[in-house]
Length: 337
Image 1: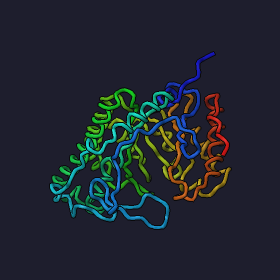
Image 2: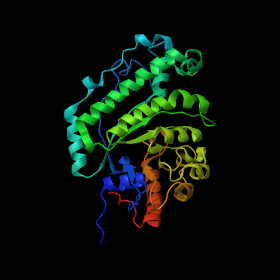
Image 3: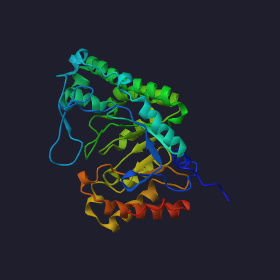
């Protein structure tokens, strides 16, 4: 009898298309997760609501992470005023070692998150409109700021690689790029300005042996091609219906691993098992294969999108059925509440 695969092996095999024994799963809200988050202080807020870059966050009564309303720079040409955080001073090394040891003992896939890796941070620093217009109107200063952001995050990469070695398996990050209809900018501009900087960041990650996971919201169909070119291994897409499940499968199946779930806008808030089942099966038919290429992943704040745990339980059951049909094994059994 073949030896049961560990969580680490299952995730790695899914990413590399090497036949995991079941779907990898990241559902911490339900107590099941093949991965472990290795923390560092890449995102924190002081009592004044400002994060480590000086960006001021505000929240409404709605449960979510909030939004940047206070931009420390008026425009790109003020980049020399920017106080770039020193992440070496912010890191809790003992906490990292503690969680890393737990991850190793449990044979899980260890991932270090970096928040707002490039364009999102540029927006937060100068404001959305200024961030877009300055790419054309003030290219030199836009490049200077982008490089400072990239350099700061490469510092995180090097620090974590030195501290964790080959026990760290991936870096994950966010950079939202789309509206509901299209990306914010043309692909020509994206490739010219952003692709080389992404490649520089992701190359640093790959040099340490880590996989690269990127989240992006919106209709980012074209951006995913750029992610592949820049070295992304896993793309987190939480609105598969908006993207077009069939289209994305035709273009990218087998070329990049998908991290996804039932659509967080079009499906989950409707609390309809039939719709959830259809998403699971359409994703299986178009984004998954027996070799792998898919990680079943949670949306972190169910309250923010109006999705209670009982709906997540239903989704878990439907993706477990898909896992059993495709790989032969269901997802791990949920623990009683």
